[in-house]
Length: 150
Image (cartoon, rainbow, N blue to C red):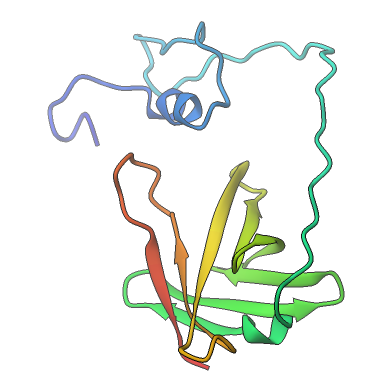
């Protein structure tokens, strides 16, 4: 896109990795080929793996399960499974972990991201009527709201 617009080439992959905290500060764009990302050698570094803090859900999973839609992003399905809730968006299945206050942590394994899904309940607080999801990573953008259809 940069070339088509006559702009200086930018290594967008590197910028996104830095934005998501997945790339070290010393990795820089290759000015000869802006799309080439330098490969870092694997090092045997012991990472501290945090065990997820499991919070008991305040209401039954059926309060959240259903089909949600957005006019631009399409349909998202929230289903109850034997392990809890699972979101399906564009054929990508993502397990959901309850974190409290009608909010779930959802891991996009394909992209290495964890995103927070926040449900808004109906007036009687029995059934979710929408989900707010921060799909846009740019600072200052509002979460995308999917409205329940079933």
